[in-house]
Length: 616
Image (cartoon, rainbow, N blue to C red; front, side):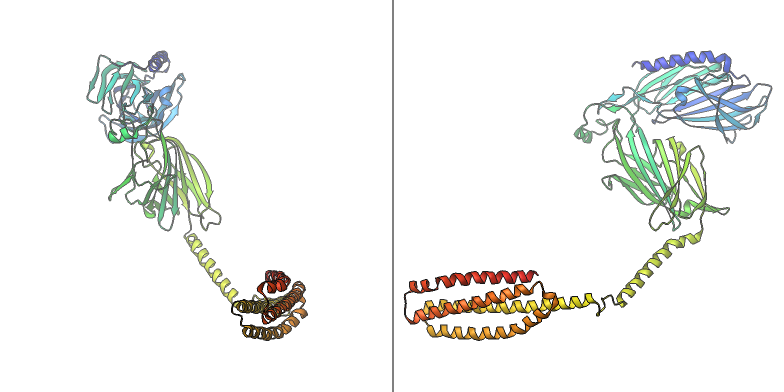
């Protein structure tokens, strides 16, 4: 048999000593528990204990409350406690009893007491059947705290074989339900018995108040230890027919931490052997008419999910991108829509939302749950009714087409378990006329847009034709048009120059003097025509006040082009004369060499001036 962890043995021994000193001072003699049957469920990482008590009043006076005692080390992990009672000789229909924390006189600080308030006092000799459900978190401690990928997860649970009560107990039993698998060790008492996956202690008889018998169980539990560090659940109401739910999860594996490296090859080949302590999926039970369901994380949509739905429920199987081992965590978002008529109702002049508080995920512990109820813009007189204490505050959220924002009711609660998945109500007043606000804003916006377009199309936005700026623009446009025509004439002159150059090349090749003279005569005629076309343009340009920047360059251009024209004609005459005198080619080149250099320089200057004028 494996050894029980030493720290737990020390805690059990200390608690036993403390309780021994409590017996005389805190015992209550008015009530006697004639029978106590406890059933502890350890199949999940959330521990549930159901105590069925038969309580008798043996005192002289009526009793209006029943005290329930828990050690502080156990009470700090208490997430929920509920009591159901019925009075009579036989157990009948039970009613829910209010529970509150009390501090009886003379009670030691090592114990935490709760009081189950009876609907009417229990008279002398009467019997009360009381069922107490307690739910504990973080009560299963991994041992060892670190395991490899292939090892199963072992946990330790500590309790008392005797029912800890301030009243005497005549007879009692304890049954501990285990998840199956191997049991490393458990505290062996003479009446302890392990049958299949259930460990039984008792019966015990005639136990004094605050009797305590330590029990420690060390067993295998590979069920998902799903612990959400924080969950933000946003419920947005739209009176156009939809309730949108958005849930943001930050989930970790709360079991034994993974030791060593993780091998995906081993995990995929034998996932139930090489990853027995991990969990791959979670089950969310959504309302039956949920629609538009999505499941995504920071990367995007996660396709490894499955959805089943029928008339009774909608079940979503969520599978993260990777398996979760001890200490690993993941974040994701689940969203879905619900029909408005199934969750928002009208009563006594107010509307109210009636929806569950907790998460739809099965067997999840939420260390911090934030529920945000986003009401329509214009809601007022907001009230909240919750079945358990919560921290409440209000915020404002701005969305599309909002003016003053939407009121948001924020509820916060730590250590939320599936037992907290109860209905709560948010009451508010909302005028139906407010529904027309956003459509009217859209209609008005489009109407004003169309009116603006009509006005723009029918309005003359041009500058007045008598204004100085308009006249200056007209003059500048005239200057630009004139300059473009002048540029065209000079480009034609350059083309004539190129023809004269071509006639000289033909002369040197063929010796046809008459053809060369004819080309010269045609060029003279073209130059005269271009000069005639240029004169009125120069007159317009010179008379315009907007041409003060460009006119000096145009004058320089005219002078350079005329000089180049004269040089070109002189060179042409020299070449023709040389050919008539039948001079040698070298002599001809010598006679026109200086003229050729001057013509090339002038052409470059003319082209530069034309480019400069184009830029202006």
